[in-house]
Image 1: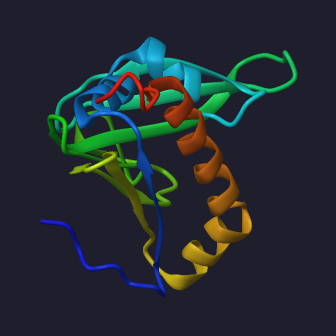
Image 2 (image 1 turned 30 degrees about the vertical axis):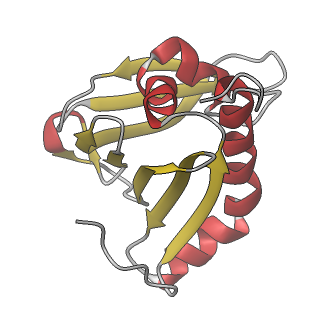
Length: 162
């Protein structure tokens, strides 16, 4: 079940990526591939933990300008449906433990499309203030940039086919 989009609390970004859902799934579930696109360049990403199971941790760090790696995301997977859907939240950390500062839950859906995959990130917040904060922090630019980076990593040329 995908919750209905609530414009007062949710943000969403979608695009068609010219790659099969299984290829995009691999970019989400292979730590080395994930590091290549998850944080807007030129910042660098390091996957600390990627425990692909409900209750498993997704923990990343980032480095900007060649500086030391610092915490970026400490989240918990809620649902993984291979090649179709990933759901994670930073309201919980590994093994369903409550997080000190919950902010969002993200639902990533991958649906077959004639040109590849219809990719959607639906990001839910507990209230309008948190949704507005995320928008002001640059949700469209940041998430749009990383989706573009993901697309460049996985897309095939039209001549190569899907």
